[in-house]
Length: 178
Image 1 (cartoon, rainbow, N blue to C red):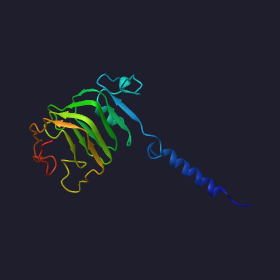
Image 2: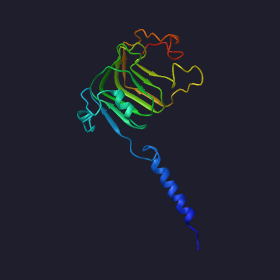
Image 3: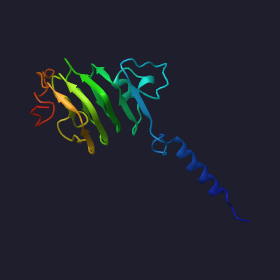
Image 4: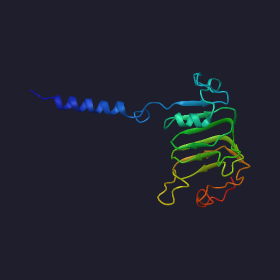
């Protein structure tokens, strides 16, 4: 008689591994999260009219790698840090970064930022920095495959002052200007 027990155990192990992989790795479709200044956690999050999030940062934190975050029409007063692969799309969205270091900071690979007006940042309106900047001085890895398009960045570089002991530029070679 043929012993099929090792094949059954192997098939069970493979099935268990696939079930425990993150959704996007296992091939599930990515999600779209909506942000609106009037967003509410009680909303269904199917469109700008039913946005679940009222800040871009809250949606970015909740998003999984590969998801899309859509910032709907309105003004958002925040600095958005993107530390995972995702698409951040603005639909007449404005980030007013008055008093903040930057408007949008990308520290991950495979990121798209498109469709925003970003202004009044003390540093850059949109910055793409190595993970860990400014703390890392060697061994930093620059993000790869970052697309920044169809954005308007104005009135930034308003006098960023780094914390004590930090260099005067966030990233070597950053001369400002947008």
